[in-house]
Image 1 (cartoon, chains in turn orange, blue):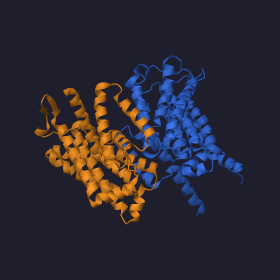
Image 2 (cartoon, helix red, strand yellow):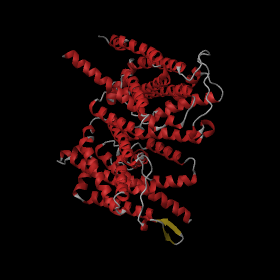
Image 3 (tube, helix red, strand yellow):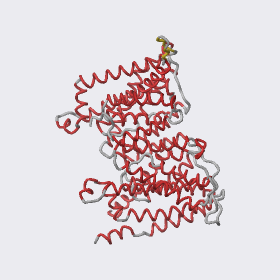
Image 4 (cartoon, chains in turn blue, purple):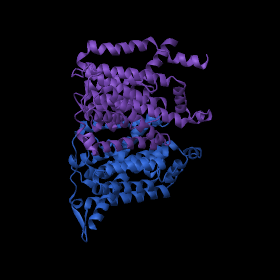
Length: 286
Length: 323
């Protein structure tokens, strides 16, 4: 029984990591229909910020997390202003190709600065080891991860539901033309949302180091689960991403126990079948 | 001009094309004898690239998993050969038949979905197949790749040697025959309808074109082309690994097509030539820098050369004529 709970918790915490990594993409895709395959590259950036600060500058792990968020958000905003803004109107193929180009280049840049090897960070003692609850032993770091993800979810929902900017974002996702016609500056809203969403990916990348390691391929590797979460959950839906991420995380980890040979196969099969019947995912806002 | 003669004029073979094919047949044998196996893999890749051009360039179907069909073709021909039938041309035909059948089934899913769902279904199918190829290792050799392929003499006469004379001639001849077929298809009324569907599916429906049936047809044909390309690679290199199905290959082929220019067949060939030769020359030193250049090229082409090198050259030629 306690093994089962431990496995489920492992899966759930991995799902929460996926949620942090994908929720920004879900919102920006829903907002602008901009197919941004470079989202994983921004996540990798956040991971390397944390790695560099902890290992080279000796910062404490927790203190690097806000910086991973900020640095990624800032650089994403630059990319948005210089590069991505030019191709919002020029078709899906161009968006796919240009952002894949960014991922390729990010691989090379990361390999140049950090080498092609796996990196991990030294966690503070209170995040190492296990927390025992009765006869249940849960890894401390994964508990921390779940707490951060739930806090971010709560924050995001409060932000979107109860602030003026959140209302603007919701209006723009529901119908950008009407929202623009009512005087909202869609481009500015999008730029800010893009920066915030990428920042969350950066935070996710930083938190992912201890679970997935970080290497120059991170931008590619994380892209597939992130896209699965976004497409199954439905564009522009925070709850959709949350549920899809939790389900994917649990299924991924549980699948490794139950069917070690066919776990990934079943995930892709489910995705294809689900998208065949629900091309917009489960909770699309449009 | 009446429509029939307009199509005929569009399909007429220009002298440049003849020069190109003669050069392709002569130059590698005469001047680059040491690079014949590279030339053979360029021809294979060009064929694969043409296959993607038919669905992406002409019909506008964006696929991130086109290597799935390349891989199915490679495994079909490879397994056939490893199980004792190494006759190359029948291997190609079987690979074409199998990939066309799979492509036909998949095409029913493809035409139903768009945007992110289309990307994810094509991507998901190729990952799914890669997992299958690794799992069924008694057939495929698993992640080590398929061993024991033995390609018999071509037409019972020419042996596939280490130098690649036979390999290049074989690959180029296959490419040429299938290129003529592709050329015939895209310059037919059917091909023109595909371009119309790409530009405006609502209007073609209003004109009475069966969009879905057309898209299914070209997808099936393109799948067979990709399958033949994969089978060629399996027969020439005498090995198949799960990378044949991988995302890397799907992405690379898209890069080549975009670089050369979509929707013009020769763009696919040119892109394959430039990309493969550049990779052969550059990636020997540092693989990671190679990826940097691919990324940069993709970004620059999308921003400044949206119709690829050939599209850019055409625009230059038009400007020159006007000046």
